[in-house]
Image (cartoon, rainbow, N blue to C red; front, side, top):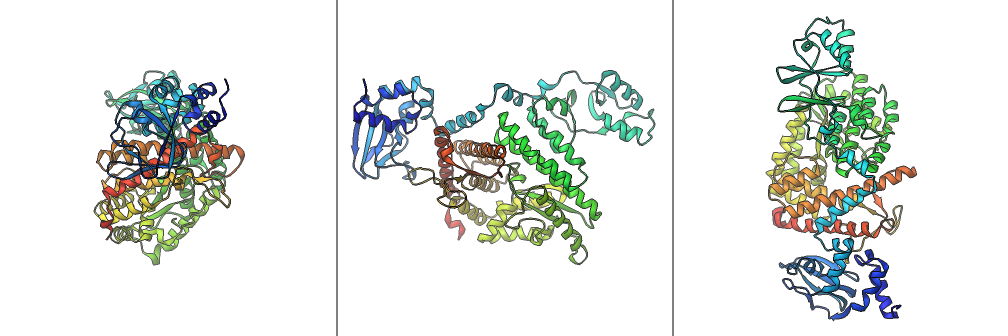
Length: 624
């Protein structure tokens, strides 16, 4: 029988709000006749903390707010907000007090109907699970658009890629013996051992460059031409980790070792079977590029790599590492080309990368962030010209490749970001002792720093100074906390998504500025406070939890919120690539599903909770 007008109106109202929007039409049709209506005057308690709910309440009109036992605001909700569901689902006491902040009508879903719906409809039930679990499920669901086959190859371990037992030769065997062994076994490399332990690797390239081209005596020991102490991996290492190691080091063979003994070998060819758009070969081609124009041409393949990563269900965390590794290869190549043009550097230096690339979190559409750390033997009157030319040549080359200049000028081409180590020490000390707004802004960029080229000792010494200075300055940490807490998430008073009203990005919101960057700042703050040496956001959150700076629940929430937002941006950028548009972080919520919008709000809610928690560790009084 068709519903009467009033019940039909309730049905349509429920159909427009989660989680009722996930119910089949026939089921939704049966719900309104079983509901009751309640009225709560403004200022009255709708559901008390510690009580045992007997029904799910859905705000029909008006507004409510949720506060914890300390009176802290947790959430405000308008029409469509559900309260009491989590407690009803678990049988636990109501965790927060719900009060009416306007005269409010609620629809009451009786417990038997609630349990009937949760028992028969998983999407409806999942809505009332813990927020971290919901976000984690949302991340998984984001990646379920790819085939099972594509996901499974990315989840393989190195053990599954090792096709045969290791082929090895003694270090005192002759080069000729090694070459004959490789020919007989039809392999492109052989492991070199001393007893049972791995001491080196000999490849076809080694035979060409170190034996034939160098007219080396083939009767000499393998140890004289092998690559000693090669980079290795273990059997349990994920295949994607092995792939990234090959990318970062621009190598094609990776011995697999357990307890110091070789158990096999994986190669770039093995890993090529995992991905059509393989970044290993892109990095290899970049390393051989003879000019900036070739680097720029090769860099056009990067968006295709990202498309392949998303298609195969790669997490945003792992995709960011791949994109970063390709970006590193580009930057390292243009630096090498610049050095070849200018000649040897007059004093040692370190080229350091900053920002998202330093955190291994680079996406498409990134700009430049880098600096030069010069040896303290640097003398401006003698050396300034060489380093100025190097910085400008690299910066302009990166611009040609497709990385725009930083609008804030945080690049080595800016003399302020091209300083001797002693000056950087002084800058870090000044920023942490006297954290003016400008100092906090400078430090927020410079404290995400990673070595890229040159003398790694200079970078290591500077990083150590940063860690000591930040951890030892409560006032600096308090200013970082205030900055992180002040960022506005695009979430309205009643948890609606706030979009741009005018301009180029009308009706869209920036998931980077409003979400991802705030989590980055929160993670950086807690990591510096506990002396963590981690660079990536996920690793920093893990260290912060271990140090007790944040709770395990909040740490998991933030990690899942970061992954959800970063993956949403990644998918958005892939769509832009396919449409031939420049990649950015502006997402139109109207283009998202109800599921995605609901979890987008949940992710922003996590960020707000984390911002509120900051005040407990970094009180404002520390800033005075």
